Amino acid sequence: MKRFIHHSELARDQRFVRQDNAPSTVLASLPDDVDTVVNVFDQFSDMIEKSVQGTAAEPLFDEYGPAFGLVTLNEPLQPGAPAERQRLAMRLHAIFVGELQALEGASRSLWDFPDAPWEFKMNMARQAWDEARHVQIFEKLMDHVGCKTGDYPESTFLFECACSEDPALRVAGVNRGLEGLACDVFRDLIRFAEQLGDELMKQAMDYVLADELTHVRFGSEWVKEFTRGDPERFKRAQDFRRQVDKQFSLGGARSDREDAAVPIAMQDRREAGFTEEELRELTQLSGGGPSRKTLTAATKIIRERHLARRAEQREQTQEATA
Amino acid sequence: MSEQRMYPGTGPDERTTFAPYSAFEIPADLRELHGHYDVESMARRVRNFRYAEEWSMMILGGWIATIPELPVKTGLGKIVWDAAQAADVLGKRLPELRCGRKSVDASESPNDGFAGFVQAVAEPETPDLTIEKLAGMFDVLKPHLIEVYERTARETDYISDAPTIELLEDIVRKARRHQAWAAEVLDRLCDTDARQQRRRARAAELTRQLEACGGVAGDLGIANA
Image (cartoon, rainbow over all chains, first blue to last red; front, top):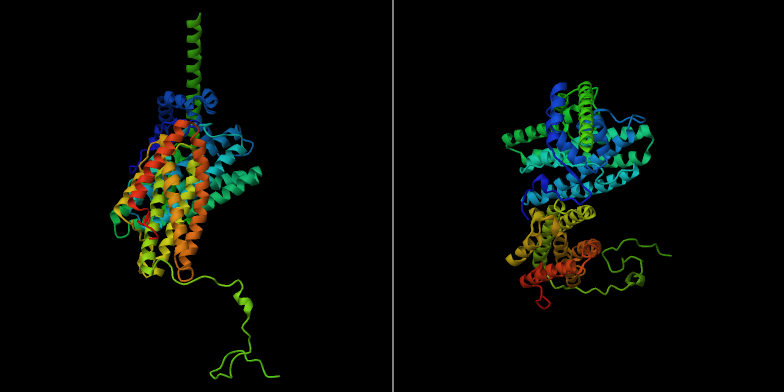
């Protein structure tokens, strides 16, 4: 078995549909400008349409066009909000595939770095079990809200961004970047479950969040250990973590901004070993994407263009039939 | 009535008043001293066992991303952790067997043949080879480890080497659970004659290789080694 695999090689059963990672990558670097956002999503329209065919996201694409993801990403989850159930299902499905990739990332570290210290292997093995349980938990939670595996396309963006071939960078990406994002998302879902009065979801998230803090701590400790006495490598690891954090901020959807859909879980991150300086940096770099106002305006234009294209296609079909 | 003497003194008439109580011998301790392995040879075996557990953990960890069946991915996640714990407790036994404080992460293949066998187990890679992956690990390597661990626990000194016996018994208990799980998965996956044949062929090929190298401790087939 070779060391290091490409994200396209992550094995899945026939229920899964894969989504190209390009839109997620581009979304991470979009400026706060309506025209740019519109043009980018127009450009990816065919690719996004293809990836949602036959999934539960197809009706959303029909209704909103290629920026349907922004509709769900852009607004915080609130009980009673429009399409609350579908947005919750999409979010749980996204976390489910994220947990799957975290399982694959942690367990691959055991094979990819055979000469790593034993304690590192123990930590990664423990994380593999934790992530496997998280996958099982999210399968149950998806069932709880009436959603199932493969309902939405899977982007392998998280694995692609986080899985470096240098173990110091891998733990910076997976354990600090990806797992840090998980802390933010789970804290937000605990808040939502509390508002909803959903004790089952709240308790499950509470346990998962506790595990994630442990995984971030693994990352904090191993970045230090792998880069001990090597300031250049430490800098590379920190730069990599910043890059991953920027990408995982999803254009500001996860940030400390007032209009963020997922706020940064500052207290949980402190407990997990993030320093105040790192948190300040995260606040800065995650807050730079398009504002909610920009995304709302862009989504409206993208939707109008999409509906116009659909109407034109219908007319052409009718003419051809006549 | 003379005062009860709680502790023995130095003279023969200064004994305590506590009578030897025969119930202490029930059940009788039938264990005998002297096992098949001295400290040095047991330490070598523990390093060999640790080698097998550490590599099992790494191989299974590598496979998780390459296996498409979701319950197999998640099931292996737990087994990866159990294998890591097994390697860890085996390593912690090494300093107790006079291998030095730094020996806790020492793993050692008994010979090049077994190291080659482990690499052969790890070989299947693509997503269409779940049967070959699981057959190598759970039809050949793990049952072999269980057999050798149990034999080692039976043959070592029951009293002097009890800590090794205890940890091997714990590892075996979990390994049997893994084997039962994998047997169920493999039975389900091998639902045609052709797939059953793939499983048998893979197991037969690796069993030959395992026997040729003498197994995890290098003494397979050597009478009462």
